[in-house]
Length: 123
Image (cartoon, rainbow, N blue to C red; front, side):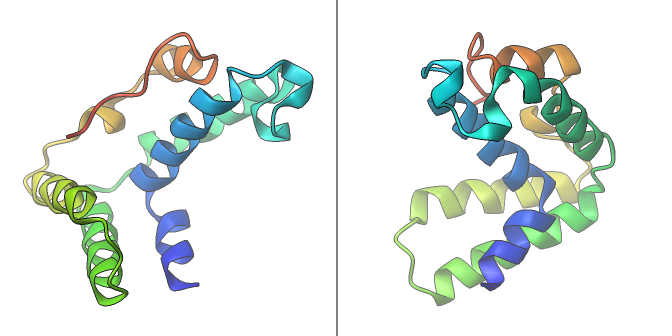
């Protein structure tokens, strides 16, 4: 529902999810992977994620992260450790400090989506 809207609207949550899924999918043979993570589709995903990161607007992203935190708390989701990290990232974005994920290059994304490099740790 509403959390999905924030998830899709937030660049950092969307990119983070894609990179996490890539670690799972890269361990599988290409023909068994989800379609988006198959070798033939990775170049498109790299372009899409790189564009989202390039277009990231820190104040808007901070607001989306804070809204996600509020909604998760209201839904009583057991995610305290993750919510603290999101709140910290939102505060950094408000100070125009970009987290590691927001600074990923096309080469970084390519290596991560191929399973050759782990996603950044934002904790």
